[in-house]
Length: 386
Image (cartoon, rainbow, N blue to C red):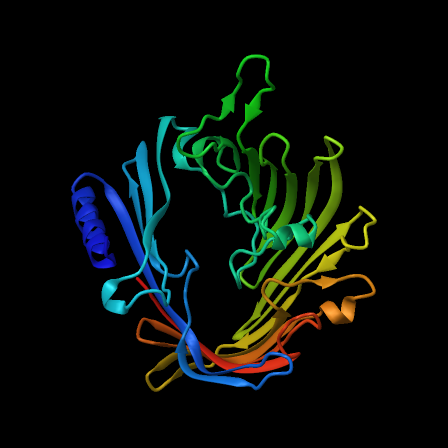
């Protein structure tokens, strides 16, 4: 089905729902690319691309969200589309639904959810909106054996969840997520009981402080994580610290071992028009294997809101340096060789409801990368959210 048909279906659905219950609908459209970009493989000629649009496959960047709240029951629906180069614009791109669920309250304190049950609003950095310290071996993250970031506090699938709020400051939830067409717990004959991924979470708010804890079990004979955190938020400061403990399942030993702990440090400080942001997730691995070193990632950003200039609103020059996406700095003898970072300076601004960001970027690749060590580009992004 083409995107136009799907969007029309969503619009009709929203109109119908509005006659029955209060609802909110938001949409976001994002375009990204480069005004000019250099790429250069080792021992090869440099390649330059001018006015290139990038593929946008991030689920949070292009889509529609509809929330229905009828008091004692409601629903949530998301439609997103991926911009790729595999089809022409007039043919449309892949569009899919995600994060779909319904909920109801048999009593005021209890919320029952059926459908997508992942909780992704625990402590998380606000720059990339996803990166949470990971305690597992970096090689396992790169090989998709574990999530690249432990963003979800409990599970990441379709299933069942219960959230209990005995009083306003405290919420405790539990979820099991077998997916569609599978059961949460199964047993056949004398075989061992098999269970699907499950998790439990708790959050407590005390004035400007928030305390969070969760346990996430990826299922029988699979990895597990425990995550706790404490944070503070005021008008000019948002900060948290959260240890994340990783428990590996070692198939050769048929046992579980806690071989990693990550410490997630994050802070945003705002002073008038100046905003400073820092993120430092550090992972300590204890296997002792040379191929499983401790590692860290990093981000530091400074931005200053200059206000309005002509038709431009919220003109905000910035500079940031961060570890390159998909990389980490290993804390061993290969530290300098593993260092891969992105340095970018530019400005964000608004034209009407459009958010524009243009900058100049330098990428420093790892020594083992097939790319030359240093490349540069002039990237941009444009988005509208309504």
